[in-house]
Image 1 (spheres, rainbow, N blue to C red):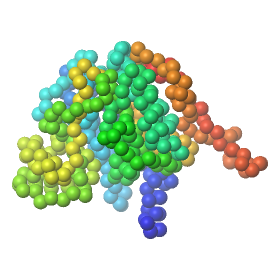
Image 2: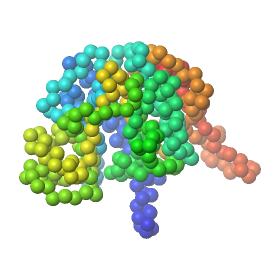
Image 3: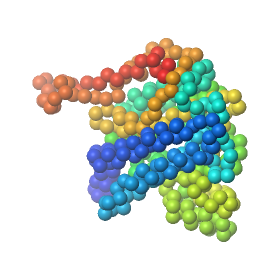
Image 4: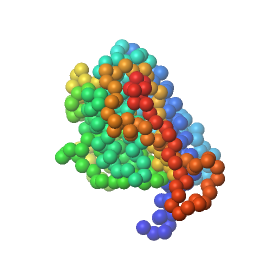
Length: 373
């Protein structure tokens, strides 16, 4: 790598205050969008309407940013809004013609107090997220997080869902090289990696009261895709070429919803694009009927003063059937996420060689209280 490339790489990581500001500005929009989506989750609400409101809000808010700068700054929806209900694991963002609605008692209902197994699976996801936040820190390894979140899920008699990956983030890259595996098995493997200062991660945790081995039930339900930029093929169908040209113009890098394309023409065109690996599909996966699935995701910046979780949501009241008694899980939750200088003032030279001038700021999570949130 040349010195110019290295300088550009440094300018795009968290050593640049401008980069940190952009991450936090995007996170603020995401947090507000999530609250909007939550407010729309009511019985009889059409799922496609909720997804579209989330996407429209993000497009509007990002469109108002950096309008007066000379250099063009790419902005918009990085991943379409999805509302996956009950045993649906992920990626449910239906087309405009879909009539699916939320029903009373669906697990996406936010305001009601939850009890029993539905509360267990959400508490497992919330607690696993808190543990992951404390372990995604410089010096720790990806496998440490994988092992820990599985132990947390087991404490609630739940499973971490297989095949879910947490990725390092970079500019225009949502699936960086460093990866945290949800469940280690013979089918899915990733390289061992150590977290480093000034890195950014999207931590993705899905828990289930079922087996944690979701299935694709119908490929026709897939509506989210991402351009495979390293693949090329001369498409045969006119509709495919038209759709692919539109995708390259509107969504050259980030995932998109087929809802953004002309629906009738898109159905056939997308199929040929996927069959020849020009697009990466994000399939809608399901656990067995009657199983509950909870999904939590957040972005964390590994700053010099500690881990900074910049996306979050308010937690509803839960009454799970299990509580955290495992001492190792309690120890993880008791870890701080920040570091600070002793005395809180200017940094002073250590009087003795090797004297430590930094301490961990205590931000422990009470395991019993967390289980009730």
